[in-house]
Image (cartoon, rainbow, N blue to C red; front, side, top):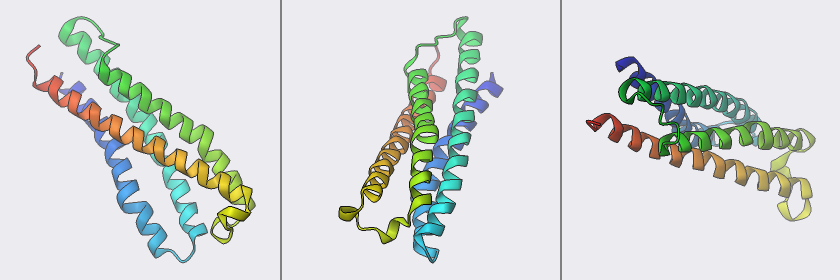
Length: 161
């Protein structure tokens, strides 16, 4: 049982900790320190892709560990718990961001220098900004849902049932 709890907690730590580090430390630092926004964007893009893959693996590890934990403790999977629903939503948001939004943003970045284009005069820049806003919303959604999973998991380990 301790191994399953460890895997669930590790999965949450890696995923949520990675998002917090990326959003509040890495990205702002890169855009503040590197000489061009294109260079900072290249690093952020590569890092975000790795973060997404870490999240996808972490989500699957959490779900499998949690289901097996439930089976061992309660002799049922309890697949439709709120925490599992949140993790499935987190995985869905991550998939949309990684395979839907990010590739479109990459194509737009390849065609232009984003920082040199005024939003009001360029449709590509406006589309990039729209996609960036959605990417940010999805990452924020994953973060807040993940914090909810942390709370639910902590309560679950504390309960006697």
